[in-house]
Length: 304
Length: 105
Image (cartoon, rainbow over all chains, first blue to last red; front, top):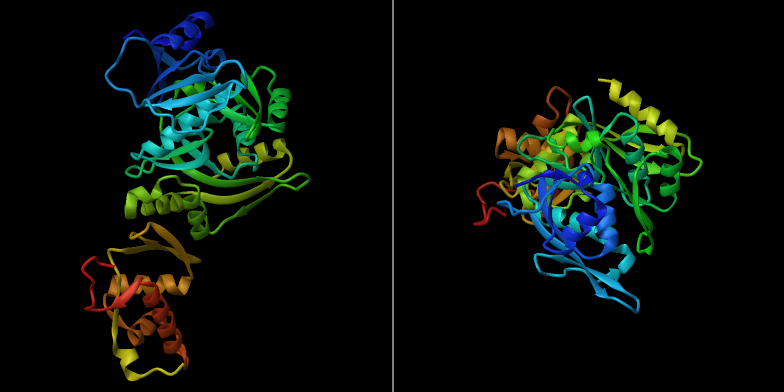
């Protein structure tokens, strides 16, 4: 098996591979077989998975076998997401093909990977300790996550916290960060060197664009981290920064609301989340200024 | 609430293994494995469940004594505990000792 970084091949070569028999893409801890003839998918993978490894020739095991295929080519063109030969979702607009691949992958992980308790939350690491950011859409989670990644935190995941119920450690799965609407320009202004992928307009989530994970985040994907903080962020225009402790029982209730598969693990899953609450400081963060929020997380990370 | 003698001497037990719970200084969370639901409970309710797990089958009177250990019991305390136990029993988290169901539920 000849492993290469995606960055080591040209866009044209990658496009050809994706179009023919597909590529095996390492997205730790998973291996994904991806196939697509849609150019925007090749562009997205080439730009945003540049630090990930891929290979062409087989391999023993694939976690997910996916494809994003064109559905209608000429009038109102569409694309569809294929998983193990099935198409579980309604087709989307053709220009959303890369975003569709990302959303489909999220679904693959949350619906099929029960070795972990998966929580809808960003997770980053600093000094061996993990910061978990569960939040509903619109709370500024991904904006915060991206900004933290550029300020000394290692991205473990923007979308999914994978908690090992046996060890209590979080497993990293660094992938592109999904930015929406105003956060795209905010990050572009703050981090002009950041690599952003294709922009999809008028999606169900508004305008969507993905941001490449840092090389360090991808290279250190095999390093798990012990959770130390759970922070529920809420962006509120004009709000003064506030960081308030949340009671453990309430923190646990909120975490389970954000968990995709805690129920699959029975009492063990319940105790794994309760242990997480026991080991972590739990806070509610309200903010309007990104720099203030970053400073606040900086202070958290140097504390006990 | 009037308490008959029977209510005070009947023994209750935690409905395990269906129910499990965790407590903290300000309250607790109960897990019902039958449908994977979680319920946030008051500190008093969490403490009643803890007593039943650690001490075993107990009457309302005994639970009250454990709950108020080291503190003076006031008239009506046992009635309050009994009300709480009845609520937990109605919900299914505790049951009368010796009344196990085949499924543990």
